[in-house]
Image (tube, rainbow, N blue to C red; front, side, top):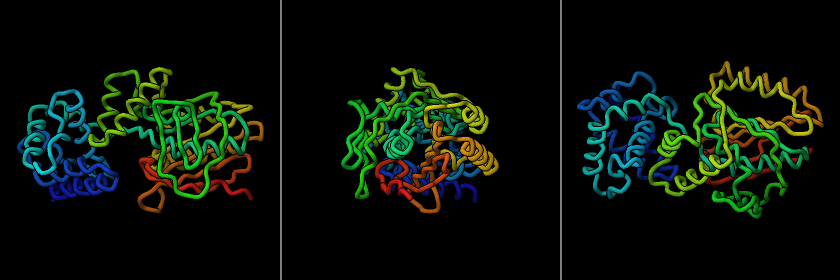
Length: 348
């Protein structure tokens, strides 16, 4: 029965990859679902996985896909993505060879959950930052929870097209999501006076091993994402970007205790808060609400979120700003930032 659950988890992941524009990763997951056996140490490990294998649990299919992609990036195996779609037998033989001859590397990678830092989410968050700048009229001090390598901490170093709005200086990272809605966000200059982020397992853009890990979890047939991530990592290296290794709640306590007079302190997160245990989420919500109660017009606090809600297939973009405490859903977006449905802030 457990073998069946594991195989089904790979099929669930395959359907998700199809919907998110990665036919190769979907094909790979289906091949593993159909053919993985216990004849290799890796196969035995996966088919005996003790927890929830699927996307809502330990994401074992993406752990395996990332390990195989890392081997290909390092030229240790032939890139599986180059195998023609009709050659399923060839694809599986290449996978099986990798499982057999690179077992130690793959087993080590299976120990850790996938780590991504989707740069296109900056195009989802930017309309929120522009709205905050328009409402408060102050520089921004940034605090990102679950920042990974910090690539969305440097959103202001990218170039954008958001509907009719062109924003940002020339950059090697250009973001232009499909824009849904009849309006553009406010056109405002943003001054970032401080940026900080935390993650339980942050990735260092200056580390070759961490760059490999981040690139390996980008799906191998999505060359635009690979190029964008590589360019964003280079910008991060050039600017000495650093994410602190810390528990989100402990870090928030420290960040919210620090004064930011003359600036708007923005707490933000994208597809991160939802993974906190319920008790920690409640503690975090209380911390932010307490800090909001202390906010003043001279030192406003804002919270910008891109997180899943009850609507399947997309994330809600919500903004709350203090001292008023008003909260609105200002849009929705694809989880990978491929499209943004902009609603904007409605003045009362």
